[in-house]
Length: 251
Length: 313
Picture 1 (cartoon, rainbow over the protein chains, first blue to last red):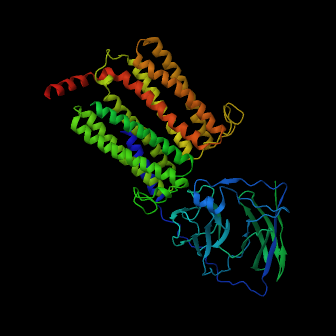
Picture 2 (picture 1 turned 180 degrees about the vertical axis):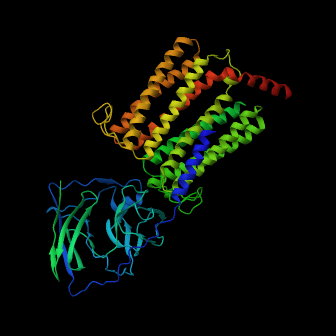
């Protein structure tokens, strides 16, 4: 009798733990203070990689003919896009610390769109505000499952067939980063930075980024990359100043 | 009864295939590739188009289809048993098997709905092996060699105790393996046969502890199999009904150790991983088979029941 009892107890505990309500806390509303556009500055720079760029893994897409038709049977992974000059694309740059809690930042009404195209997430790295709508589209001629694996927000997993309407989700709590995966196509990954402030950017193909509208102050700026990790730098922005902060990931 | 026995053999094969398919789902990380349950992307499970069984869906949906087949076969078993099986305890075992397969299906659904929580996934893996043991036992109990043994059954209390211990240890070892898989500890110790270059890991985390426990369990099971083989050869050398499955056990335990090492050295290659799961099930059921043979003497009343039933008809 002990084994079934243990099984049932384990089951009940697990179910009750799993069915706890989603985090209800909305992002901090702030104290209502607005950034003065006349004094706001900019943080910009470039993210590079020092050393021999890693060779991209080759993705075998032959488990789904729709993916093969869209991207080929074997395609290079876009997990670490490093240009010949060392510029690193798809790095999430954000102000990690130092923003005065008295500030309030309006959440944009328009949604951020994360597409599934060629059996990849596009873009692979993206930022969204806590409380802002995130729309996940499927432009492929096959089905995907959209599986978000946050640590703080609520995990979800939705199926999305070809031509299905966009999946709309709103993260409520700031969290850097939330990983998205597709379990149908195991190579598909995306990373979403959920931010409480608008001070974030994703590096372009030339490794550049720009964060505008930053009030004067001293901040901890962080760069996050799914393969190279995270590093931080202290940056002080003066009135209407454009401050350059370069980051280099090392081998 | 002959056809019921054959039907049970089919059910054993289907269940074994189901265990292997479940292993493939975990090994390919496809457990959540179908996010809904009991439907599949909104379709009834049986009308989901085969053309859409791509990527991870092939493994997860395939696993569900095989599971449904096993469920239907188990319902058929219960009906058949109630019609032809004279032994009440056998009919009850059939009902227990049906209950187990239903609970197993619900556990499978819950693990999908709640994003593969380890306790539910481990329970799902553990109950799968118990169900397999049940149908193997039912198959043995309906066999001609069980119902009408050619020679008087072995009567050795020490052998019975040894086999109960061995079978229980193998089951615990399987549970440890399932825990290792579902907490992602399969490569927590990346080298083999040493652990981080040492006999005992120099550093400990829960994952390393579970992984090392599974390796230690493998060593204990192997030593117990060797000791049991020595015992059977020493005391029951003239009993082919014990020696034949014992030979098979020795071969598959050797294979299982090689597969376990290959899982680590191949970086959890899915096919090797799945073969390791399936061979684990084969080790368990072979141990169970020998255990049942050792306990045959306790079932002498079976023969009397069958004779009474035959006289009535």
